Length: 243
Image (cartoon, rainbow, N blue to C red; front, side, top):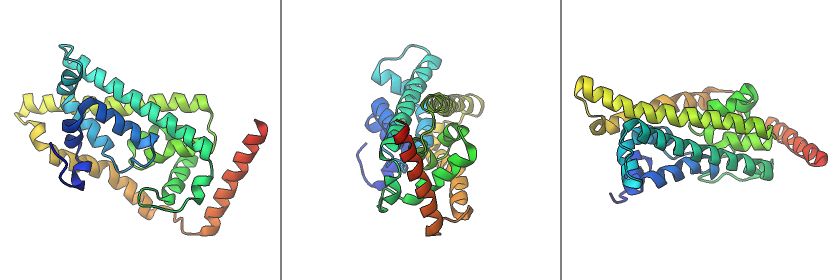
């Protein structure tokens, strides 16, 4: 499969056919580790990867002979990439700190996402790290915000592992076994319905986030934003003094 247009970048099948196992891991890592990967198809990529799990593992390492083990191997590797990505995001946030809030918006970076992730983190506490895994855009910036506000490293690692495992295993196994269920019970091959499936996943995962961003508390008051920034800067300075 060759690259034809920007729409290919939103198509999970494109990545699976182009690079398979290793490209999938890189994309999952990039979603949080590189913090510019919020536009990548995380949820739908995992679900579709589950459908192709046996093929992906077979082409990369050779099949174990068990659908369950092949799917588990893929989900474990994806969970590892997701955890490492979050840890890199946390490290980046802890090092750069409030400077990100002064960065000018670009095509790939929007400061409003940091404020939205910060609000989400403040509202939900440590559970936010786990919940964020299932929320596009939020999961990209959450580890950075956790690093900025200096969340306890051990607590972040614990919640990061829990979230990464739940996210990867639930979506990959759902894709794999729903494909088998629909084929056995209804004679429907989900591989032939991928466009429809991707649209459903995108709607289910992104519409709530879009509605929250559109109708949530406005962040247009620069005074409020400056106050939040000042608080983060003060907290960063206090932590530096303690060190």
